[in-house]
Image (tube, one colour):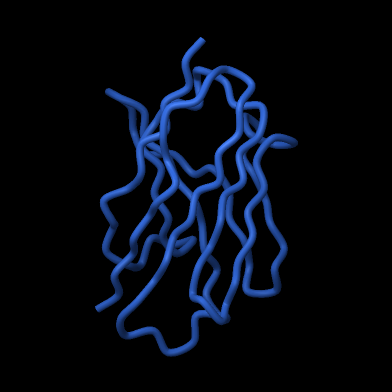
Length: 116
């Protein structure tokens, strides 16, 4: 079983920045082979894909965050990051990571709140 732990969330003003981390542990044959993704869930809404990063390090993003968010990974640390710049109130949500196909159990997520 794989455990995911997200961290780095908090309260930030409109236009601010945060960097989220997601560490994976447990039975992972090779983290570097796994396409990872960030998701978010706002209150009363479904969980949506924010973006993903391939095993080769190529990233793609939802239109709503393109140009503001950057996903990176450190395979040696089994960690993925989400750098969020120019945050907007509509980015307020609980942020989660998982594989691109959501294969692993969800972590507790990390709350991001952007005040206007």
